[in-house]
Amino acid sequence: MLLLASASPARRRLLEQAAIPHRVQVSGVDEDAIHHADPAQLVQLLAKAKAEAVHSQLEASGDAGDPISAVLGCDSVLSVDGEVFGKPADADEAMARWQRMRGHWGELHTGHCLLPGPAAAAGSQQRCVCVTTRVLFSPLTDAEIAAYVDTGEPLQCAGGFALEGRGGSCVERLDGCYSNVIGLSLPLLRRWLAPLPFFFGRS
Picture 1 (cartoon, rainbow, N blue to C red):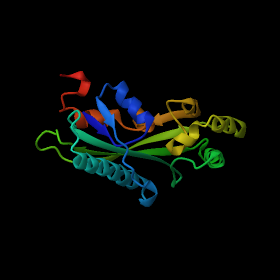
Picture 2: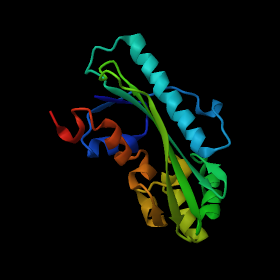
Picture 3: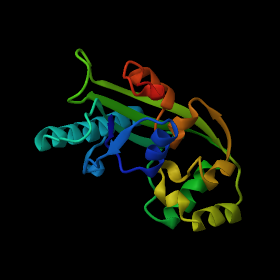
């Protein structure tokens, strides 16, 4: 079983849709305390910090539930013209960001860190990588941006949009992994977890 070190409902849904058995344990990591000028490096540091925190909690608790084969930490940010966007702090910030983003390409970076769990196969190693997907945003009017922000959806998401929600209509094109924009790269996870018996429902 996979232990997801993230509170993100979108990441949980991706794992559920892929039929990957998992549990969720929130890391409690202070994300504001971790900094790096390079967004690709930043998300890897955040993902690693989350995975390591939950891995330590697992070791300390001596968890007696389903055997954990791996712990997965993830984090995402959007960069547009060199500026990094996480979750907007409020509606005003979401509005200002969309005014910057509209009609432009951005890069959605998701850091993935996989640590071997107590039930990992012998020789399993830590893996940490960033997957980047380019996103072309629609040239929305101020009225369209305000209407989208009023839904509240942008306040819940890195970059201020949810591709799988209302925000999907505000994206013109993607270059790269679709699920990566939602929260984690399923193709990457398939490559990492393929040796494990639960992938693709194998028994």
